[in-house]
Structure formats: structure tokens, C-alpha cells
Length: 256
Image (cartoon, rainbow, N blue to C red; front, top):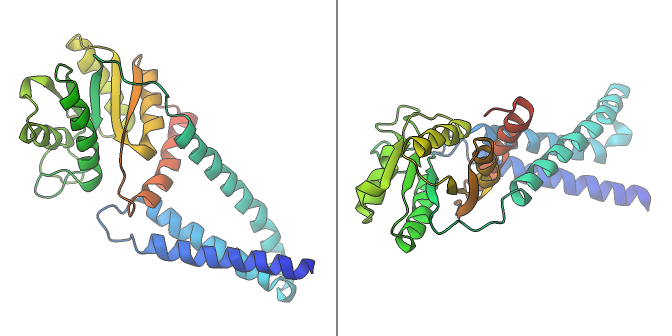
């Protein structure tokens, strides 16, 4: 009975690996392709191979048995790292509500070839716009440089979008030099201090990104509260896995 149960577990593992590989492989070549997409394919193949090896463990050669015994703890370590990271992404988001006079910071995430915001960045603009419309006196910093051959900076793209939606240009401050989340918050802090804006900030970004963005805000002396932007379902898996590397960068390399 025990052997049958073990084989069932490995069959589920192999099936899960196969499905995961297909999901992440389908993202390759898409606009939102990133390192998370490749990581997902790699981990899916690894899961599938572990599952298949477990099903046929009795027929494996001595070398195969050795590799299998080594791969199992490696897989457990990787799984543990993912659980801890995803736990941080979910539970480390500040529970505070933005102050009524908070400075809004919208973080960029890609510009289309026509200068319009990418789908993910548009969702961030939408979330920021909703707050700005209900708080007509607060300023907003749009943060993001010109990356990847884009025709304009992320900040400029977001500014144009906000103005088109009726936000007065005098309320909008631009930070267009940053290339990373750490720089987004560091350079936005400089804008805040130069213009004597409120250091209580409302950080607007995607749900998977909020915890790390608020962490960088705190490291720069700001008091952050989150404003959650929706992430399109088809882009969430790759961006969530990509965030694992970024969290490692934040805590191990400890960038500011």
C-alpha cells in the first residue's frame, strides 16, 4: 500500500511539473517574458523529472538512484525558498492606510512602442488615478526611467496618461532616471525632499511588488502605505517568480 501511495504522489508531481512547464513555456516570446518565465520552465522540468524518476525509482541505475537522492533535498530547499519568498510578498505588505495628505508614488513597469503604458503599468496608473481623483489636493510622483529601447521614459508615459484622465500637470512630479525598484524609491525620495513634499507616501504598484517597494521606501526614510494595483492573471506567474530574485537582491545584497 505504501509503495502505491508513493507512486501516486510522484505521479501527481510529474503531472504538476508538466503543467507548469507548459504554462511558463507559453509565456516565452510574449511582451511580459522575463527571467521568471525561464525559471518557471526550469522548475517545471525539474518537478516532472523528479516525479518520473520517483515512479520508476526501482528500475533506476545506481547512478540514477544517487542523482535522485541528491535531487530530492535540492528540490525541498528550492521549495522552501519559494515559500518563504512568497510569504514575504503576501504578509510583509504594510497594513496601514495612506494618510489623507500622503504623497503618491506610482512605480513604472514598461512602455509600449507607441509610448503608451504596458498592461501592468496601466493597472498601476489606474489604481493611482482612482486615489488621486478622490484626493484632489495630493501630489503624485511618477517614477521610472527609459528602458529597453522604449521611445519615452516610464515616468513620461504615466504622466501623459494621468493628464489625459484629467489630473492637473501641476500635481505631477517626474522621476525619470531610475532603472530598478531600489532606484525608484531612492530617487523619488530626493524629489520629495527637494520639493518639500510629505514623507508619508502612498506607494502604488502591483500586488506582487508591494512588499519590496514599501521595504525600499522605509529604507529611504519614508513612511509607506500600499495602494494595490491588479496584475493581469496571465502575467502574474512569471512576475511572481521574477520577484524571488528581487527579494534575494533586497535582503542578501541589501541594496538601497
